[in-house]
Structure formats: structure tokens, C-alpha cells
Image (tube, rainbow, N blue to C red; front, side):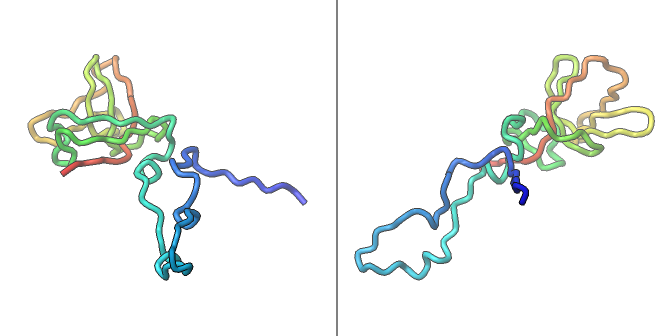
Length: 143
């Protein structure tokens, strides 16, 4: 019989046990009926990060992406391992300026498109100093 190998996500979470495995003291000697239906707390790292070594957090400054729902002060979860696709929101450095824009590619050229009418789209064919820093995979906003 061959060995079976199971591969999971690179990030295993901060807790090495489930909530059901935590022992509780009960003076009556009987467990509560709700203990069978207890759920583990929500770990935002497990929910938002797919590849921990390639992920970082970025605080948005400015209003260039306000029509996409990204506002000044929002925290973006950026994954450097995600493939750049048409329509992705990315963090990039263009001629020394860091920016968050939507990537758009057509048959002849690529553009960085803002989600605000005050800004113009940038044709990447005209610039040589373009570096992709990652694809935005999630957004965290505090009310």
C-alpha cells in the first residue's frame, strides 16, 4: 500500500487546536448542551491570507480608487504570488511613485486605470520604470 500525502495551505493559523478540544470545568459534572455546537473564532489571517510568505498589508492613501470602494485609510491585503490578470487591482511603482490602480490590457498595450474621474489612465507603454508589487486580494476597513 502506498503512502498518502496530504498537502494543506502554507498558513496553518495561530491556533493549533479547535475550540472543541479546549477542556472546560463544569461544577455539575455535565457538559452544556451548546458545547456540541460551539464554533471556533474567526481568524482573519486564515480568511484573508492564502500565501503568508508572499502577502503584506498596505494602507491606502488618496482617492484614486474610490469608485471601486477603496477609500483613504483602508488596509489592502496584497499578495505577490497572485497572477496579474486583466481587471485586477494592483499595487505598483511607476517612475518611483507607488500607486494602486486597476490593470487593463488590450491587444496592443497595458494601462493603469484609476477608479476616479479626476485621474487619467496611464499607458504603460510610455514608461519604462514599472514594477508590480502585488495584486490586491482583500480589503479591511474600520468604521
